[in-house]
Image (tube, rainbow, N blue to C red; front, top):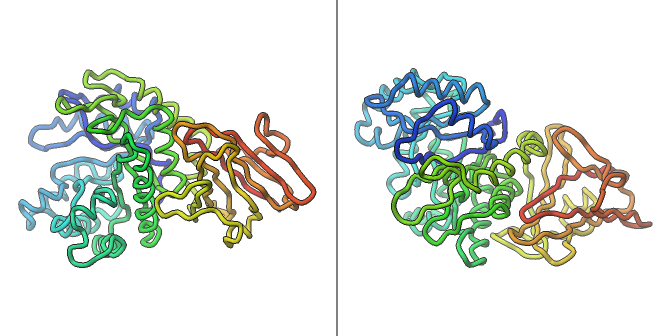
Length: 418
């Protein structure tokens, strides 16, 4: 699976009318903790190339990787003139494909049915012309694909996406899902069903996976508050996504009820901008490097099952290996227990508060012969027994209990030493 310089935190390419892509705008991305972005659309007949490249230069200087949205790379360009696509795409690569900020080119959004085959063909052409780049195409949610008839030829979702991986050779999957911000909490199950099916597919095919979560209220979806942004982001991290994007960072729509984006339609920062900035920078400060360089192994539910993820059980082999005899919350708040493996082959545990409105204390029950419980951060490893502050640690004769208070959608990382 492809690796990234930093954990990808980005947004979908929606910009308000009259948007100017400048160094100052890129600096706002950096200040918000973004490491990844989709560019405004470039049209060689109307876009100022010098200004476009200057903004790309600013991204490279500030450590922000880019998916370039160039009309010459899109699947529609292929559909209009298939025999000319390779030559046309080569021109886009010559202009932007070797820029230090460029990670890949945007192909298309939410293809289904007969639109899948052209996307597969475009992926292959892009990889032949520019094998150092990542073709980028975004899929519908798992339920949305079912509704659109991805299995009209009798294929299950797993067969459909496995075939796409094989036929396109695309090194990454991407999908969007916003139902979790509907008023009814039962939609949380759908949110996790998407994570479950897409992360399983990414693992089977050794692909990176980007989850596009909701950052702007529209239709029945509410404007996510700080807790709900954190919960969406960290749920994707906890279940093994390679990066998280927001739909969207800019409020560009004058119709319907789009509202509450990080940057409003007048170019002003909103409450959402500040909430995202704290979320992103805190994650990168404490956990980004660890997560970005580690492999997700599995996820189990605590208290309540969602999306196909099974309950934590003590007889699961990895739990027996790690000596975890229990996992629960003090007040019955649902959670997740995820297992990761770092570059050294060492396993560590993430405990996640799977609520977007309740804080709670989550704790692990460990075999009594555990020597150390290490709390992990990017730059330090803390002996949790000595430094657990207002958290919870009890060493008994036959068991050790280690507990931590987690904000809604919060998590902590632990490594166990025997």
